[in-house]
Length: 298
Image (cartoon, rainbow, N blue to C red; front, top):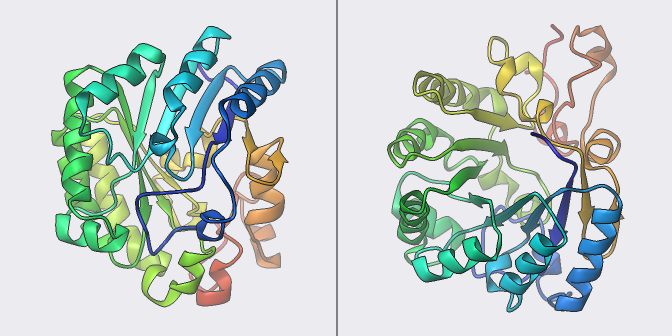
């Protein structure tokens, strides 16, 4: 069942230093939210009809009061509680058990490369890949729902089918590959981080075929319909729940509306497309790099 979701960013510190980070500027600017601040946000969002919750950005598991925050959310009757994490702490099965006992119902780890050395180099955290995989194994042993989030970049898109095969062997519940959002570090490093979408599409479709064969739900984000023909059911924007976002300096009431009005971009020729009214188009920064030539109205 799909509920309105509240996305609560508890802190902007992180134990990774990813080249494609979109919140890099906030790392030193903002302190971690206190438990009372988090409780107040949880109360507010519940009163605004949110029944699902995700603790995120940048690394919630290093917040000193995450477990207490989860317990509070459970006690005020949030029905789904997800942790979105880089997962380096989930190698500790006792910590995972504490989160489950507190009330977490879904875990969303980030793993971006099939090759350990490539992953560790990009996130700048030694042994990060091994820690994430150990965390996935721990959660599988504990029979938890595992929803993988990965970012598509120039250095990893060729590895997507191999990474998918690994995730299938690890029995994850669902996975998604989101095209890198070109902000902050990703923008600063765009020459080495941002691939051309049409170059990545063959690898993405090979991954989706593999997921379908093994009956695992799989989705992509920020890739328009014109590049996803015959794979339209895998466009994540169709299934992303209505969601509020409690960011560092502002609250976004509707993530869906914000994507349409602030983050995505279209051109006049898009109006000729049969998918115009449902397609969210690419991140608005993308055409500034690769123009519009690969996007053809359906």
